[in-house]
Image: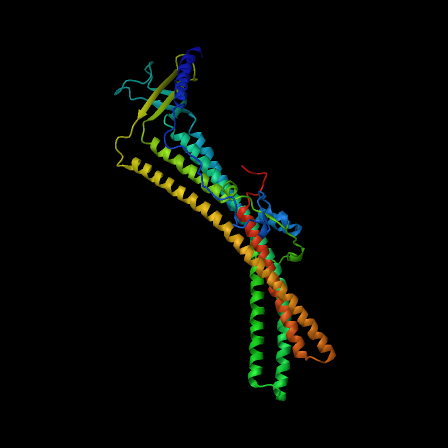
Length: 477
């Protein structure tokens, strides 16, 4: 064992020399976080007029809606949705690739052994053994160490790129979770409103049928013309078509909600109590500059830009000399191994430099730089899209809130007309047809109000998601 100590020490020293080389600088451009100037306000007249504030929004934006039922729906979706399972699987794969790249920084150590029985042609060649035996058994064991010394930082830049790719996938996973929460809220709200609309339009259809029956009787009595009856038939057909379309939308929305929750589309679930949702009066949207550090899709694009920057360094390092340290330590014997004078060792340092590869290595650099330019453009597009999404959501919310208020006033006016007409009917001053007409108009106005309310809530959800940060979770890799 003492005779093996010297070679072992020298091999260790050779590897230590390689470690010193790792302190060399890594080639290629260094990543710098992009600086994108944005304004301090979302609206030229201030945010207060639209019920907004500049506080930083939370990830779980739906908590401001104060609906336990919606909380449970979103929790179920985040737990069972295949979309999230796919994103999490991609994240695990990216994390594994990151760990694989780290392994290139360390030496590769292998252990091997072999046992054989041999016979030499001693009449032709000299015997392999010193004792001249033609038949012999040969045992060998060997520990080999190889180290690709990262002189110019190719491995370190590859680790940097892999880490940035994993970070990008983390943010994409967060974006998927955030988008799913919005989809669940929007479809749950739409399903609830459509359920109410379905009932109202079914009643309006029944009223329209009764009005048509009254008009047919009037036509038979000769009190109205054929044109008046045809007009009534057209009105009934229009109500029928609208009622059928609302039912179709309701069923489709139910199926979509089931998919978001990770359930089979035929499964019917309890509708969200839309009237129980009491969103906060003010919506936190933060300042525009905060959006660039908070939105998952922008952060994912930033991480992808970081990875592209590091890949340029990898491609440049491949143009430069590659240094390899190899060493082996073992024993060969016809009997037990590691006896006196049966050991061997070897150590080497190699350097290779590509002289001609048909331009492939240089084109790799050209391609990496082009990918870097593309990643920069993708980041700028992500920023512009984030600002556009938020601005569009603001304008949409503003106009839909006005439409909702108008729908409420229309319902209130229709109710007044219905009440007065019913009073006249009770006194004999209005016909049954007029009562049904006023009642049908009120039912259709109610359906329009439910739709307008659902639209405003959907707008609030999309705005909250547009400005929100990632959802909190305890299992972040």
